[in-house]
Length: 255
Ligand code: GLN
Image 1: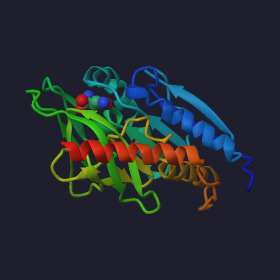
Image 2 (image 1 turned 30 degrees about the vertical axis):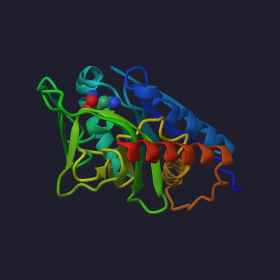
Image 3 (image 1 turned 90 degrees about the vertical axis):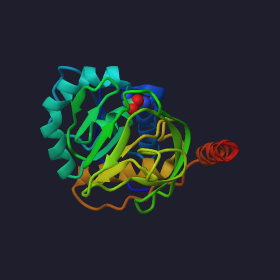
């Protein structure tokens, strides 16, 4: 196995606020997988009023309900410019659910408030005023990013997201709702930025997505296409993924 002497600089945004369904597990999965592959990590947690560090190779933001999204919205917008620069520089980014919604152009919450997004994705999101739609349950998607394949998780959102003409979806829905329950798109991706509705946490049971994010972070750190070869995921991880897929399929077929 190749050894990596430079640590990956990980930034976790609003871990104290945006952590629905233990999205913090994504950070734990990255730390564990990196350790296994001989990659050191430095971690910076950035919340309200904190500045972003100068450098970042991998950035995480989790989900949060409307209230939490409102709390971070102004602060996030102060950081939007730097986030856009990092996206253009191919920093590896994962934004989940409420965080994902705020990586689009705007989110109109269920009270009709417009929250400006950081505009990395060509996407807008609207939560209906009357709670007649809420996407809740297990979800299984197939990623449109080569090498990632199937991804399984849990979704719970009122917001319905629509991609604009420049937007690309992260995945296609096999079972579940995804972005809006209508067009079978799920999430978004732009350069090395992945946005998804999948909680779970999503990374511990989706090793190909985890390795994709880690590989992009290494490529950014070393500024070259390293094509890192990681060891195979543990059989326990693969078992967790296939069990989650079975449960998702069985529940969906019963509906
Ligand atoms: N507040 C958003 C919605 O309900 C996001 C929810 C979440 O992050 N789980 O659409």
